[in-house]
Structure formats: structure tokens, C-alpha cells
View 1 (cartoon, rainbow, N blue to C red):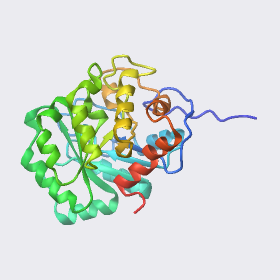
View 2: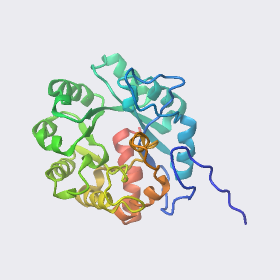
View 3: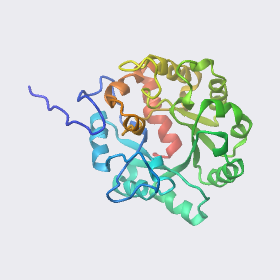
Length: 294
């Protein structure tokens, strides 16, 4: 009996297939599309990431054995969401998206994007100067009417600093990449309790994505970040999402070796040790947040 060797996925190492049993309806809740040939990067972008197109991502999706995915507008495009929206039109009903904005779209624009598959907006916050409370509150109020969420790519210290604001927003919120908890502090950082409480109150979600990012221990086990992910699952499994963060822009920018995406996916078993938990994180949770069943 012969087995077909999977094609090499761009921006990913290895060709192994998952050892994890992948349930039907599984979703990669965080990846990006880069297509600078069709859509130029924002003025001032220095990352110059090569094309990581819909066709490239479909290779990874096939290797995973996933049915669904969520496209997140990357910082290389700033607030230009054309690439993300174009990807949505090509991927159809199996895809959703999270966009980046600097001003609140009109009701008609929001409704149009909702029909395309957009379900949230993302704020990248690396300092307190990036945290525009008034604008964030206005967005939260408008998004709550559509059932959208705000996704925060925010440093853990800033979660603590802006705790009261995060706790009072009118829409659901999502914390990218474990809330950027520092690997050396892990769950002892006060942001862990803040995020866990919001999850338990059914007001927030956490992506246990990109386990390789900022790991001190590193490949192949990333056990420091995996321990953080496991603690989040134990705190509130019904509010956990998993994402690949393909094509791993942080690794490209910092000239680090690309992770083996399937091996990182297999590490979900160490964070969610039962088939029921894996199915909840890969299927039920994203279906609820992103409206895949509606």
C-alpha cells in the first residue's frame, strides 16, 4: 500500500500529518493572507513578507484536515482590508474574518461585511498610547448589535492596566496568543486571572495560538507556553480557540525557522487531553463565536 506524501506547505516545516484525531468541522481560528502582488502593503511597512496566498493556505488546511478557517488582517496591511475580504470571497462559507479599522464603518458597510463573513475587528496594542478607550467603546457598542467581537493583540501588562475598560465593553472580546502572557511568568502574571474571570463570565475568549511565539524553551515542545494553554483550558474550556498564526509573520520578520504546523497542532492534545475537549475547541467554540452554524 502506498501513501501520498503531502506537499511542502509554504512557511511551514515538515510534511507529517496530524496524529491528533481531527473532528469534522475543525477550525483554524487565526491565520493571515498576504498577497502583495494584488494588494500592496501599507506605506512604511518594513516586513516585506512574501506572498502567502489563499492557494498556499489551502495546502495547510488540507494538511491539517480542517474544514473551516478565520482570516485575520495582518499589520502589513494596516487598515486596508481588501486582501482579507478578497480571500473571503474565494473561500466562501467555510471562512470567516477579523478586520482592522481606524474609524467605525457605517451600518451599511458593517452589514455588507457581515454578509461576506466578517465577525470581528482587531486592535493591535503594544503601548498605552495605542489604547483609544473612547473609540474602542464606540466600536464595542456598534459591534454588539451584529454579534461581532473585538479581538485584542495586547500585551499582558496592558490587560492589567486597562482591566476596568475590558470588563465593561458591550461586546464579546477575544485575546490573541494567550494574551501575550510572558513565558517566564506564565499563569502567575495577574493578566491570567483577569482573562480567566472574563471567560468564566462568558464575556471573553482566549486563543491558545502560536505556541512557538516568545517561547523560552522552544521547539519542539514549547512546554512553557503549552502549560499556559493547558491552564486556560482548565479555567474555561468553553471559551478557548485554537489557531495556527500561519504564515508566522513574527518568525519571518525575526529570521527564525518556521514551525512545523502539524506538530504544533498535535500539542493541542497536551492542553486538551480528551477527544471531547479537542472537539469543543476545534469545532463547537469557533462555530459559536464565528457563527458557522448560522
